[in-house]
Image (cartoon, rainbow, N blue to C red; front, side):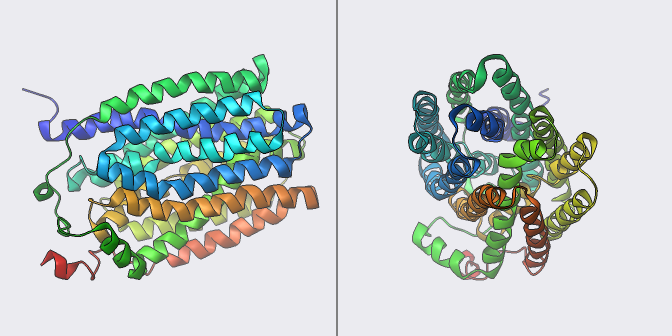
Length: 409
């Protein structure tokens, strides 16, 4: 008697190996915020100049994501993830060898940014969706997001220790070595996908990619989802990039900021699991609306009191619960609207909006910090965006797109 149903084995393998690769790449992205202050101090480059590189990384991540998702839909996730590993190692090597801000930002913004797309949510969660029965899909996406979140917790703490021990160059050399683990993990995704009959939904066997793109551009729910995810990107990139420097600006230590980022990763594991579990019981649009509304409330409370180490830790723990818990619901709605066949590419489009917001959040925060000497304006912008995102998700209908119903018939 086997403990694991044979029908679930491909999904579980995708969770384990895809989750490990996602964990390392999300950890790499989160740990980059630890480098902002030491790189600026060591090189003399401005926070705004470096912030542009971090913003470019988020923009490139988003721009490359639909391409990575489409390639994964067509050829499978393994070649996409292997290519991403090579890009990441090239970008990290350039960051370590150059003494010019332009090339540092090219390595970080273009090469590492593109690599993040190749081992991002659309590729990894798309692989999980295509191997998971529909009744377990939301929960398995929550588990995958949670596994990925562990890297955000662990690698930030490790990165801060590595910087303290050997400097930021040393930390980047270690990051390059970790890319080998991503390459090895991709092999674990060599498992079969479910047959079309095992995944109820619109019949897309005869649909072409261009047709699905045309349908998506006319689907109100898809457009609203895309607008809402822009806000998620703004929030997470602003905080992930600037929290250590924000802590320093408030008279705290860089270690306090790094620990705050680690707490986000730790509590995001819980938030992603809970969001995935709730997704099988509560409409996803209500979950997403609640998450964005709670983010706005959390920032308002945080800004209403003096910033101390403990208030920072409490805020980051709460925000961690709301961090990437948006992902299972967002990806699930995409699959509900259009089915699983093109979920990697379509979620990649939604994720591009996320990264447009991330570019703006990371870059604008650096500019406004240089102008005002603090991040207050960015926090208040984040509150307004959170309220807007809470509202735009409410009209979304969680059912097959009307444009596909004739095709399904």
